[in-house]
Amino acid sequence: MRLRIENLHKGFDGEKIIDGLSYSLEGNFFLTILGSSGSGKTTLLRIISGILKPERGTVDVHSERLGFVFQDDRLIPWLTAAQNISIVAPESNPIEFLSFVGLKGQEDKYPSQLSGGMRRRLNIARALAFNPDLILMDEPFGSLDIVIKDRLIDDIQKIWIDRKISVIMVTHDPSEAARLSTDIMLVRDKFSKIESIHLGNPVERSPDEKDKVARDLLSRMKESSSFVQ
Image (cartoon, rainbow, N blue to C red):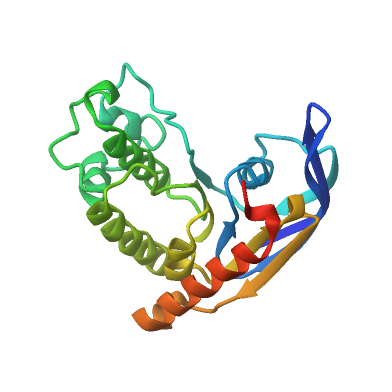
């Protein structure tokens, strides 16, 4: 997998969101784009996916099948949980992926019958069932209770290892970044300045090392006023 971003610019209504970003990464990576709310992380993720077009610059992504877990629900309300998976992945077994995210027994329920956290898990199951070689995740653990979140982080890491996919995740939570990332793009000053951090295989980090990384990331975020909203 290869991601190459060169001199990227994007703004809305006269406000610059991304100002001259260049970045590249290769291999079987788990990249976390880390920054405060409103720093443009989601905008970058949507440009990488092709949903948004930049004003200037290029994004080169080598991916044959791209999955996207949106921050907001993109479920089809008149389809059941199982049908929401089957419509994007007809050859998959919806029950397998629903069970994976803790939704076994919910296959015949409609999105309106599921809690916010359950809908978030259904979005993740649907993206995984598509069998992507690259998955983009925008705040994937929002609205999940701590037990489900903890288990899902471990499960997503297992998918990353077993299926050898690459992941680009957006979050404002340094602990999520510390647990999952091979690489971190720490956002500063509307992407005109970024801090590129290479951590290596997260499986090889002990719990104490992950805690240390999370504390260090939080400290770096606090150093810059651009993180204060």
